[in-house]
Image (cartoon, rainbow over all chains, first blue to last red; front, side, top):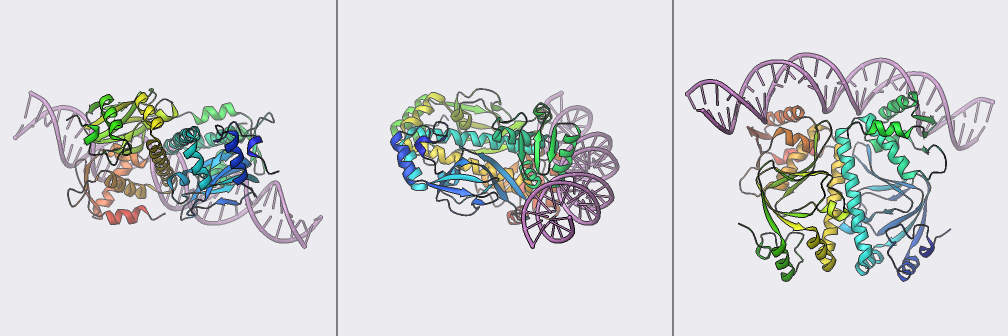
Length: 230
Length: 230
DNA sequence: TACTTCTATTGATAAAAATCATTTCAGTGG
DNA sequence: CCACTGAAATGATTTTTATCAATAGAAGTA
């Protein structure tokens, strides 16, 4: 159950891929394995970070809440991803919350452990820097698309993002169970608006739904729709 | 005219504040001082970065263009700021263009020089990392506000951003000459929409305009307007 | 099974913003 | 100084999206 860093599935792909065996053992001794139920808060906006999370399994949304209760998803996190490093680096409070979209397991690594690691292993530090640069680029993309694309195209893009993030190629068509509320928070629009365009997609045979589960039948068409403005 | 790194105004505040005198001399020998006219492109979306820019004077917008010709400003850059580092770190093409909003002077530092510096001086690397984290945070803020706030509030925010970025406290009221087109690209809306709300602000005595010059008379009111939803 | 509750869906309407058209204004060059 | 040009400003209209209201459907529970 509690995975060991030295045999972890993500040993060669995570932020810690350039750690030595010793460093991994050390991480393993100090880390703390946590389980979160769907909907549970992993960390909360405004709190001070005590360390970072390495997601072992599940799905997580990083999002911010407006005073009117509206939510905007900033990032989707999947297994193997690191979570909560930005505030840690900046030494500031969390500016967003992380909430499990599914039952999720994550290892917690303390701030001191993490800081020690990036101070002592230049490769990890430079991987971290590249990761930051990549996430910054992704966020800029989001910003530009939010400003320039209409909802229909952003919805197509969001569905493709869900697919590219969470598809583990186990079945012919990618399916995901996601509330319309969450989906609208990714797209940056109202729940009803998402539902309407989703219904359009259904009529066009691009997706199908059963309850809250959405199945993508024609990713090619979604790609076409999403990139009308690119 | 051509400033020396060792006596540069931004020696103690730039990304290079933790360089040794030797390192600064080395930077100085290899750097290249450039002058850009207002409206001139400093680097262009899609090109490969050859180095980074350290802005010595002027104002720069970093923005992306949609296929429909619409522009979205991602970041405003002022003197003392570094420009074009994200693509360099990611080793990818520029995802946005940098365009001078005013006559601008900037020093160009080659990629190899820069990479050598961050490999050899851990402090510079960690400052760079913190800078990335900060810019990422700012971009996430932008994203959330774009998704949640109506135009009137985003315009108030944009005016405050211009003030906080470019005000050098030389006069009682901050003034800036900016085209309505550029302003609307910062806010993420249409030119006419910006003009309408700007007219409202004028009627309310919050700003005044003369041609393309905007003067902020009541920053406090702008703050109030911009944070209705925070 | 019947009931309860939550969520998805659809419809009607209102609000916000974009677009198109026109007029006014400021700066530029003869 | 005046004509010219491009940008700012305003008005009218359309499009897009949000909001409010009601219905239908799924999932869990007694």
